[in-house]
Image (cartoon, rainbow, N blue to C red):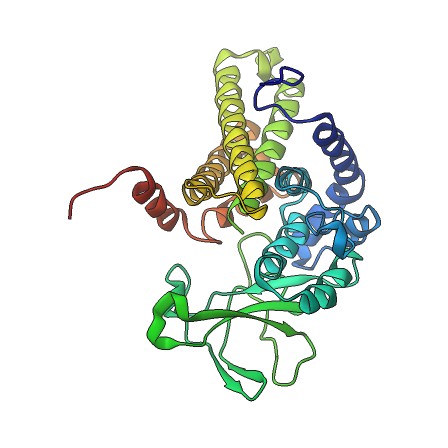
Length: 356
């Protein structure tokens, strides 16, 4: 084993990427986060900043015009953007979620047609799996795809599709063989302008106005809340001293920091396994690691943001300060891309076998 870098440490390239993304997020994304949340609008300022920096889809291989970033680099991008604005982190996150099926299984023609515009920042991808009656139980979906000569006709309704109406392309999951159960579900690319494709009214959400990618988003939210709370308690004075000087507050910050770092290590380890899997290497515990990191990181995000609100006291409960937004945003990471209750199922089946 090489000792050039610490075990489980990042390369200098990864660390440099973190610094550059954090600087961009602090300067170009964070100032617009509250506005995007209050107006429930797509964060175009963040999108444009990410495109200018070529960070909107770093995972796309160089062969298709992308940076060819590995899974850990992609996680770092999502994490650092989420530290400033969780909604904005969905731009690189969902671009990856929507395009991974193409990278895994699409023809070369489809890859050339759809990946290049995303890599150039001219279009975004969304992922359409969930339906009103098929969320965690994805196999219960009603959307159907029926072959019509050389094409398919899709019929159905999808719900909870991130960036719907904004993205140009959509990876839509539909049943092609009802008798085959989950194995009878296929993926199709649908373009925004395709005949018969329409969008409903946007949902009014609590916040946020993929698995490993969502773990990275949760991790970034938690880190942002921890950083803000730590800075606040150093400045806020009560009983003649800074809050940070009280041991009870110090213990809270220590617990928050330990949880965030544990989530980071688990997420990065899962990302490394997913990168090897994308390169064709078998990974027996990839499902376990993916579910574990998404579940753990999102639970940590909820805990840490709640503690951050507590540390700010009454100020933490008002929108003048960002931690209440972070707490609302953290909640969705426990729900989408598989609820944390569902994510615990592969954790159990992957490590603990119980008799029937």
